[in-house]
Image (cartoon, rainbow, N blue to C red; front, side, top):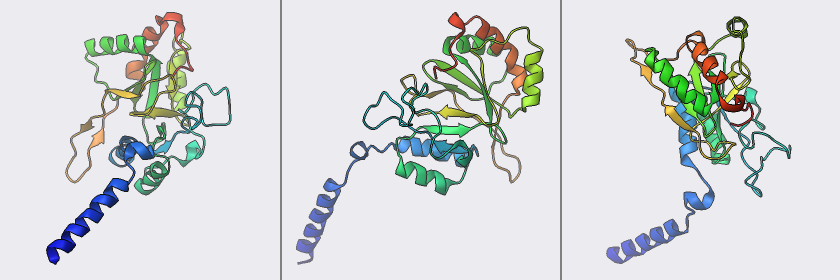
Length: 240
């Protein structure tokens, strides 16, 4: 009798499992939740979900603007000020919206970034490596790459740029009040966001947690300005 009941229970379990929706059926993307939690808890980067694409027209943004120039890849609801490192909030957001892009609020205690057209960025990285420069994480979309740097103030950035004869319009700065699209989100220009250079941490001190190493913006800005100046067409500030 026990064997018969055991077989019946197993058949019921198998039947229940077969009726459960799969990640493909539910549209879930565990990789995005995992990435958001890694950023929030391991690196202490405040994150929030991007608006995403329209459910009826995947080529358009889910926001009310029919002419949105960065479809899916910007904050909307919640707004940028809601960015957090709280794993409970992050889990709730991506449980409700499992395909939402991962956005990091830049500045403050979080990294800042400098972005430029992909071709120019690849050349800039070669130059910086040749100079022996140690780089931090590099985020890549099909059209633009972003170099993460230590937090900088608007005053410092203004002084650096004022000293330049020319700053190309294709060079973009993501500081306080800005945001950056992180892997493995879908890029607004098509394709996926990826790590060209993944984050790495300094060894932890006694009783301390590992810390992410980031270069200072003044250490890389010259090479990025020069590389952007030679970018075909000057690049585009809207193609992310």
